[in-house]
Length: 248
Image 1 (cartoon, rainbow, N blue to C red):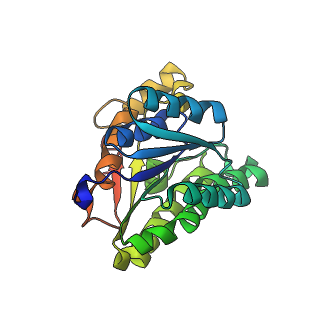
Image 2 (cartoon, rainbow, N blue to C red; image 1 turned 135 degrees about the vertical axis):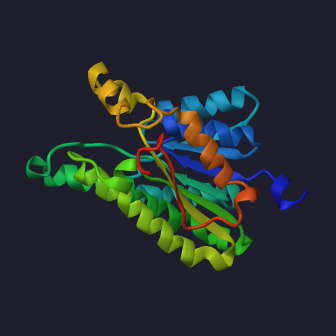
């Protein structure tokens, strides 16, 4: 088998639903063993079970990614089990929206710690075996809010913009080890997060999207799958907007 044909071990955070679930399923369909991570053991467990039932390979790991000690411990356990994680997708995130004048310190800290610091801790805990193997793929899921900002989301926009800076720094840091690091910035995607928006709000948002519709989790997963492939080996340090044209 050449490198392209060899199944890898992939870890996806926030894999219990929405975009993370679609990414986990897409990578499993490529033959990779997927470690499905989320805070809720039932959600990541259900996704892993469904992948296995469909003939794929997956395990579940319940981890609070806002807890750096918990992430460090999980990384050690995962590396002890698999030896290395070849593909890391930092997708998990939360929102605690509000105007900045009313935003509490805890709402700011919780979003930064989960959406930005969590990615840092997963990379720190898992990258060493990648460097030894001289092959790796890291994909950070940012957001259109991190590219162009969004009123009422100062914490979320800052965290997602921070992921773009982290992506570019890591891409330079790991390039000599043949590890690529890229970001994907979704726009408005049909998930639990957007489902709670009132219909009139959804329609107003669609008028700001050149393609006039929300995207699907599978459309984000398709971009991630490509960036994790051997075919994307000459792409690093980039942000791919998958947003229907919002951030042109």
